[in-house]
Length: 446
Image 1 (cartoon, rainbow, N blue to C red):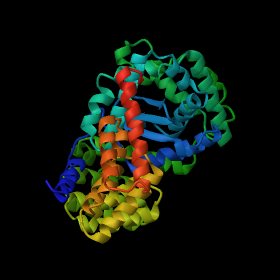
Image 2 (tube, helix red, strand yellow):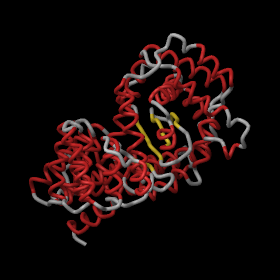
Image 3 (cartoon, rainbow, N blue to C red):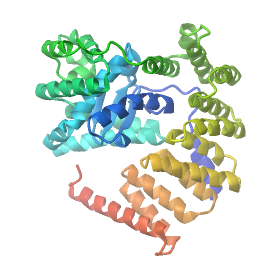
Image 4 (cartoon, rainbow, N blue to C red):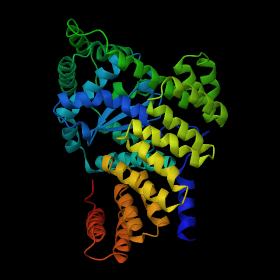
C-alpha cells in the first residue's frame, strides 16, 4: 500500500459517522460544551491559585451522577451529571468543591497511599480514557471503564475530613467570585436520600465523596449573604449545554418529540436529531436558520461544517469551519476539524494549511492524539517522511506504546540529519521510550 492509500485508509478509520450511537463509557469531546465548562473552571482555578491553562476536561457517556478531580488538573464529567443539574449554580458548586480537592493536594495524598497494583489499574483507566479521546473510542472504552473502573473508584475515595476541607475551600472560592453557594448544597441534598441504598444503587459521586447531613447544614449556614443565581450568561449556556447533550445522546425520535417548538434551542436540537438520522438537508436548513439569527456563534458554523463534511460535501465544509475559527481561534478542536476537511482535498495549498492548523492545535493541546494522527497523514501526503514518523512517535509516546514510539523515532532519524531539530526530538522520544521499556521490564512502572 502506498503512502496516499495508507493516509486515506487512516482517515476512514478515524472519522465517525453521523448516525453512530454513543455507547455507555465512551469518552467524547465537544468544543462548545468544553468552552461552557471552562467558563466555570478558569475563574475557579485562578482564585484557587492554579493555572487555568493546565485544566483539562474529560467527558464520559454515563447516566450516573458524577464529577471528579483526576491527576494532572483533569476534571472528569459524566454526561448524567451535566444533564441532571437543574441550574448552573449546581455545576459551579460541585466544580468549586473538586477544585478544592486539587488545590489542597488531596489527590497527591491518595495516589501516594495507593499500592503499586492499584496505581497500575488507575493509570490503565486513565490511558484508556485518553485512547478514547485520541480517535479510537471503542479501543479506549474497554480500558477506561472496563476492568480498570474499580481503580478509579478506589482512587477517588476521600476522607470525611478532606470532604469538609474541600467544602470550605469551595465556599471561599464562590464567595471570592461572588457566585452562589446554594448549588453545592442542593446537589448534595439530592444525594442524601441515597445513603440507605445499597452501594450498587448509589450514584458514584456519593460512593467516592462521603456525605453527611452536618456537611450540608454547614454549607447552608454560609448561604445567607450569598447571591441567589449565577449571571444570565451562565443560565443561557447551561440550557444550551443540556439540550445539546440530550440531542446527541437521546434517540433522535425522542429529541424531535421533546423539542418540537420554534425557539433557538428547539431548532438546535432538531438540527442535531436530523443530522444523526442522516437527513442532512433538514439539518442544514435548520442550522442555517440559526446562523442568520446568531451569526457570531462559532458553534453554529462548526456544526454546519460538520453536517457538510459528513454528507460528503467536503470542500463546502471548509468555509464554515474557517468562519468558526475566525470567531473562536483558540479552539484546538475547531482547528483539528478544519484540518480534517483540508486533508481530503490533496492539493499542495490545502495540505500546507492543514499542517498550519494542526500545529496551532498542538500549541494549545500538546496531548491531542487526533492532531498528531492527522499531522502524520498530512506529512505523509507531502512525502515528508521524517516529520510523518516523528508525529507517529509523538502519538506512540502519548498513548504509552513505548515500542512503537521508539520504532517511529528511529525511523524519523533515518530520514533527517543529526543537526535537524526533528532528529533531536526523535532522540528524546527514543530515550524516553527506552527508559520506560526498562522500567516496565523491571516492574517499576506504576
